[in-house]
Length: 150
Image (tube, rainbow, N blue to C red):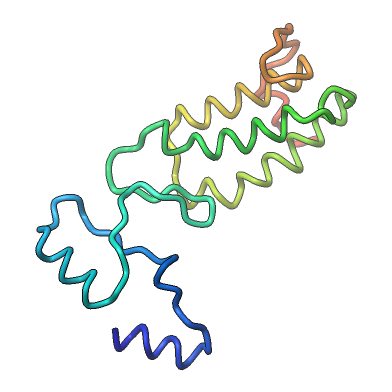
């Protein structure tokens, strides 16, 4: 509590205890959990949770932890704008908007291969068919399309 108080004094910010949470391992003794909650006045919350768009967890990686990230990409792809874009416009959307969203997030969360593959499939399907659930012939492999322009 002294550290939290020192932070409040130094930063001029006040900690909102109703919006804060304490995260402890699931096997932590209930007596310890209650004592910590009583002393600091902040309720315990459970893993996994999302912090700044990143899933935070301590167990093995599961697809459900990355659903929020995949849904954000799907929302961008399924907007009306995608239907009106040329193939060059779709390439720009994927390269400069969607992949840039992921550049900052993916190194911090280190997603499993199946999440990367799912995202690449979504990008490829959108690029060739104008929608994420459309079917179209892929005239070149996604790995070839991702090469530098020169």
